[in-house]
Image (cartoon, rainbow, N blue to C red; front, side, top):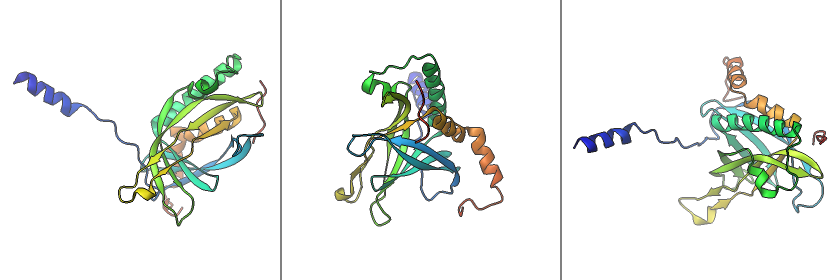
Length: 218
């Protein structure tokens, strides 16, 4: 009986991991824009630039990179833990970069060199189509393109399962975001928790509900 009681106490006290979900209708604050590069649709030729709007969702303490690619609008959400991992991963990448310790032939392995975090993805083609949403993995690493190294965010596929209609099920595309060191530093600044708290404070009196860079030499 004592053993059972102790076991029950341990089960009760154990904290289960809270699921990371964001409601797109939650209050959000635009906090900036960032640039990144991506592969051409056929994977041939040079990288292309894209700009992502950055939004902070205070209720969920989540930051979204909102961008449009291949006729689809994506909201790539980062939790606080994910943002901290990004900052640490970028710092480690910069160390390896300065030490010239980046592997040009690492292939797929280097895309997850600095860790993986759980993100949340909302994607939609237009206002008239299904708004798909699901958790997915964000891999942090690096890759060489045209002889130049880039820090990378590899957005893995997300699986949306509609509970009412199987025809509405969706799978997002795998997307790799190629980021220069300057672009990475800008994202890290927007991911900083102190900056986010300051952003909320500056807008406290307002209704927040209404509210290819130069390549790195190596």
